[in-house]
Image (cartoon, rainbow, N blue to C red; front, side, top):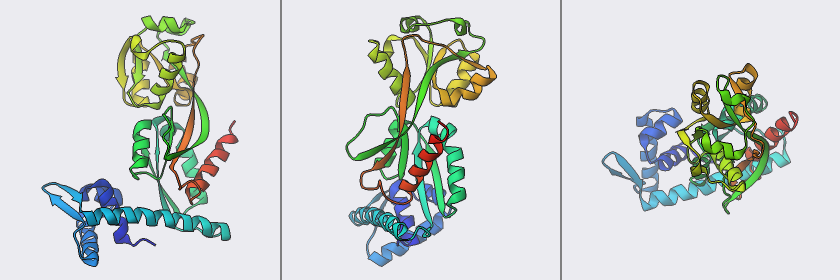
Length: 301
């Protein structure tokens, strides 16, 4: 339904950058400019204001951007309705997913591979960010659907439970802590290495500690690291205790590089949720992908 030049305009308008749009669409910047110019000639008005190295949407450009988003919504609804009539209908569609680190690195890759084998006409893009930024990207129409954990719910987003994971305390196999049975109060004397603010893992840890009457800033946090892999690599060589998703450290626990440290009166669990803008829940391919992913992981339980 949308022409190529409208798709190009949409990406430029979303990113407010010809250069970034060129990178995400894998076409030259001159081709981007040509498509935008063709639209401006078609509508006989400017769509972007160029101010030095930056651009912004004109009133006409903002109107076109909003209308294209509505058209994409209608297009997805049409595809869904056509698939209800004819299951053999397989349009070429693209879907941009956003997921927090645990999901991006340890859960989705095998799911995406299996899904693409069954749906060769679907193109998937996965963006890895922390939970707060995934929610923002969804609301900004930068992604079509997200998977997050440990985040406060907002009214214009639909949440669909996916799977439950446990966040556990871990330390290096060379750390004397591995032999100890700890209580929450003991953590007040142990240096911690934690994820950055905005991380879903950190959010559920804070919530669990609050239920035990503790605030996170009461604990001796030695370092914060932006990413699960960076945190794992740090804990391997340091004496800090850390909290990481069990799914993220399963290989290290099996190899003995990291050791789980039991904390008697602390359980940290979180539910991963698919998040979608309200009104898109039943559209193809979002609904299809969610059902496929949930089926795959229910078989593992």
